[in-house]
Amino acid sequence: MALTQISPTQARVRWDRRHARPSVIRLGDRELTVSAIDRVRDETAAYPADRGPRVTFLLETDRGQASLVFDARRRRWFVEALDPAA
Image (cartoon, rainbow, N blue to C red):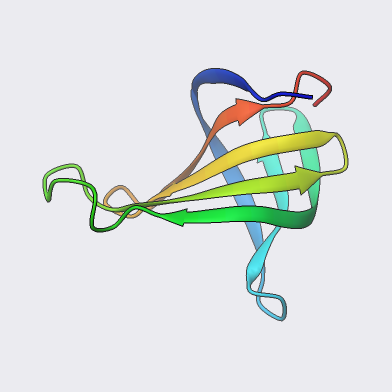
């Protein structure tokens, strides 16, 4: 299914050091287990210095796809899009 844009929602992310990728995303009362990374977009050169760099992950989870963003300036994770099934 296609991803549905949502307002950026802060998420808690557990990082798997062995595989160098997110392993679990906690979004409110939901927990999404990451099964694979589809794409990574490094936007560090594309953003003005006042907004800071971001890295966007398009992930496969146990409930569909999710778009996860790391905002380096604020040092926070955000979910910006979800599969309606998630």
